[in-house]
Image 1 (cartoon, rainbow, N blue to C red):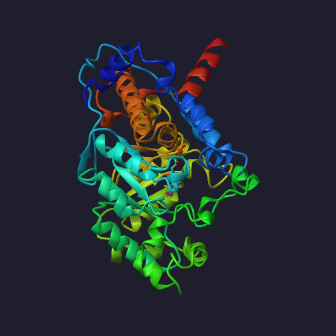
Image 2: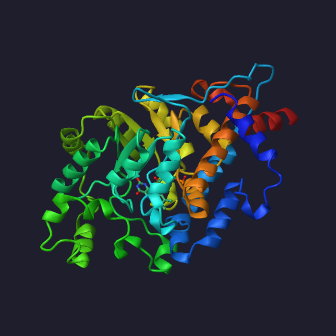
Image 3: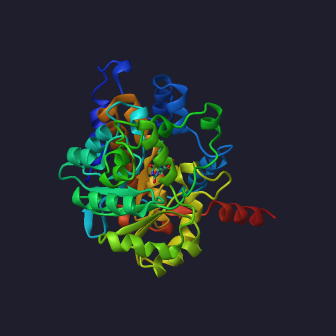
Length: 399
Ligand code: FNR
């Protein structure tokens, strides 16, 4: 995807005739503002809100702001390479769409629209267990495009096994196991409005369509929807899981397993010990624990432990190309976008998602070039200045 940034930039500059109202936003903040205008309080805050006071969401952003790029000059950056290889597959960019459930609360086409946009751009789409459409419907629109399946690892082993087999049949090539949600975080905005889409039966399509899930009900979900929703709540998550339970997943899934929600170096060590294939450094976009360490601050020590043995991906707070570049410089093999594409979906459905992703890729390409580098996968810490040290040097020199 060499020169992608220049192409997109040129496209945008050469369409000044498009009416302002018809243009999609450029800045993340403007996508969020437009989404706010489109959505009712419940859905908007379900997306925008975080755990408790929102401290973790803020920390995620502050960590990116704290890191500063120190560009190099005269380095021939005419040709750039944004590609990364993950689990034997090469992707043109280091960007994936994070698993996001209940997308129909922001757009009626929900996951179908965002998965289509991702597939058209050859960006891996990660289907959430909590999707509003079934994993098979989503796989259908993805067609030949890359796709992974995200598991919310619940209490009913039969249902979990059934979902893994369905995911394999539907062509998902990796399993993302989300570990940071054994229970739902204390989300003040959702609590204030008593808004939880699952209670209305939104985001449980994968359960209602699962033969094993249905076999556990006295009546079919069509006959007794309330009972089906109740059973979903009963089995959705499992706070009793421990590392040794990973063997169960291995028994039912023979493709790569990636643990999402690793934030402590010791857990990274355990991930290696238990033989998983990759990890995602994530704090769920600050939606689970208030006052948690940011993912960017946690990344370096985790990469140190992993020592390049397996890919280390990162999400939570990626908003612009410079964030992608900074995360890559600190060791991330690739990054996941959450809210940026969800706001794109809310604002413009499939087209909105396409524009939101396209802008971040273009920005990444240009930022890489302007940093004096031409390959995202070859970035390292030397791209970043160490501002606190630089300041202390200045201080000590002036003494
Ligand atoms: C999420 N996230 C999430 N994660 C997951 O593993 N399964 C899921 O179903 C969901 N659902 C979900 C819904 C909504 C509305 C949001 C905003 C997030 C977390 C997601 O995968 C990712 O970790 C964060 O969104 C990344 O942070 P940013 O980019 O949103 O800051």
